[in-house]
Image (cartoon, rainbow, N blue to C red; front, side, top):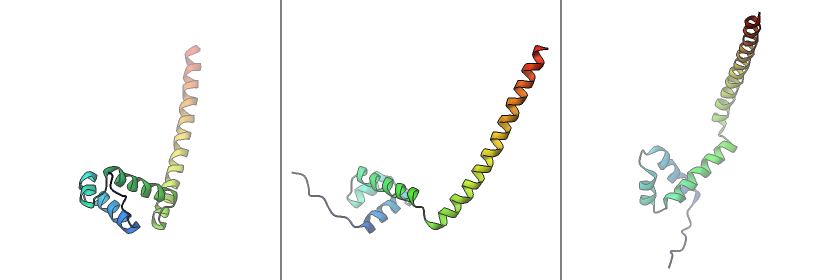
Length: 98
């Protein structure tokens, strides 16, 4: 008969995820040491990652804002370069027909 499910605290989950991300040990080892399955540990890690993506910590929001600004500028430059290449291609195609 299967064992009844253990109730774990949010603190236990957070510590397990922290260990998995920072200890350098495999998730399988950490799960075995803590008495949780590999898939359970993986679900906890994925859940934390999803929550951080939806609502990042305040210090990371500033980093994300700076990265977004940099990426928007880079995108603008790339769009301009693409337009220049399109025009140059059209110019050389027309020159070849003469």
